[in-house]
Structure formats: structure tokens, C-alpha cells
Image 1 (tube, one colour):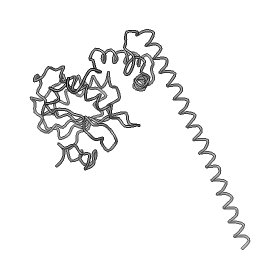
Image 2 (tube, rainbow, N blue to C red; image 1 turned 180 degrees about the horizontal axis):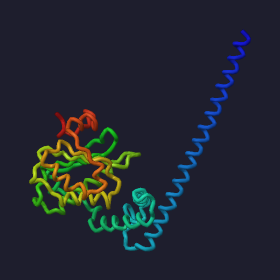
Image 3 (cartoon, rainbow, N blue to C red; image 1 turned 135 degrees about the vertical axis):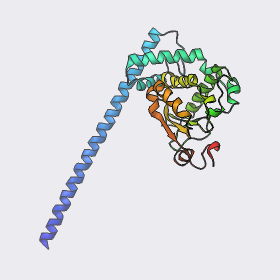
Image 4 (cartoon, rainbow, N blue to C red; image 1 turned 90 degrees about the horizontal axis):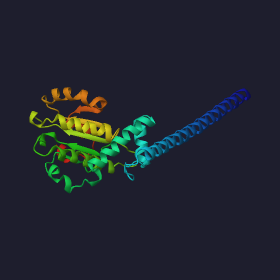
Length: 263
């Protein structure tokens, strides 16, 4: 009996010691993780201030305020996109801010894009997807190249991106793009606009596009995509071909499913 009792005490002592060591190691790991995060955050903030100071010194003609040269949130996003290369971030930021000013992004409104909106070819969905992403839905079958001034289509595109980004919930930074290709024909193909669309994402809204779904793409779309794919570069990796059924089951709930995808 005493031998068993003694063995039990030894085992309990070993377990207690192991638990204590595990707790100490986890505590050290947590402290290291917190220190690492604080250090990275401090370093990122220093780079943001460096970019901000250089833009203030060398690019005085650029506007200030939201989405301007002193917008620290925007600066940080471009730094992340350029893997914290200050020079690359400044180059891309300068181009983006100039473009926003010249394109008059802040002046876009529902009224200014009404002609393009009325076609029903693109809109921001009223609900987030299952991953909490704002959703932009495009119906290329409703697009007729040349029907409207190409600038009107570009304004619609930018307005919808701005609207989708304004719906980002806390902790989410990217959006989902859905191309409903049902009914698409060669008469709807618009390579110039598609190139503009991906240029917008690469140069002016970098890393904001999380995924692109090509839903029920017809055979005629395949050669068009193969031609376009090299033009969109790394964004091609974000594209997934899927069926409407897959979209219904994996991307939305019954309550949040877009009406045009309901059975």
C-alpha cells in the first residue's frame, strides 16, 4: 500500500512539474508574441511617418485629408501592399492619389452614374458573404460595349468599389467580386474595360480584392479568359470558376443569397 501511495505521489509531482513548465513556456511565448507585435507595430508606424514626411516635402501639390498624402491609414495599406518598401509605396501612393484627384472619385454619386446603374449590369449586394466580405456583383450579359461612353462604365466601377469598401466590417479589409456569366455572349466581351478593371485594383485599390468568382462561364468565355489572363498578372490567381449551386451553398446563407441566384 505504501509503495502504491508513494508512486502516486511521485507521478502527481511529475505531472505538476510538467504543468508548471508548460505554463511557464506558454507565458514566455505569449510575452514574446506580444513584444513582437508591439515591435512590428512600432516599426510600421515609423515607416508611415517617414512616407508622410517625404510626401509632404516632395509632393506638396497632392491633396491632403482622407485618401490624401497625409492619410496614415491609406499610407499603411500601400506600405503593406509593397511589403514595407518605402520607395515603392511612395511611387504607388503618388500615382493613386493623383488618379483619385483627376478622376474626381470623391465627387461620384448615385446621380452621376445613373445611366450606367440603370442597366443593372453591376451593383453592391446588400449583404456580406459568409466570410464577412462586401460583395460586388457584375452581370456581363447586360453589358453592351459602346452603348455608353466608356468613362461612364469606369465611373460605375469606381463608385461601386468605394461603396463596397465603405461596408467593410471591423477586421475585414477585402471584398468579393462575382461575375455572373450566365447568358454571356461574344457581343458582351469588352477586353478594354476588363483591363481597366484590373488596373484599378492593382494601382489604385491594391490588395482589396480577395477573390473573384466566374459563375457558370459558357464555353465562349474560355478563349476570352485565356487571352486576358496574362494581362491581369497575379490577380489571375484570385479567380475561381464555379457553378451557381456552389455559390449558393458555400458563399451565402439562405437569407443573404443574392436574389438573381435564388432557385
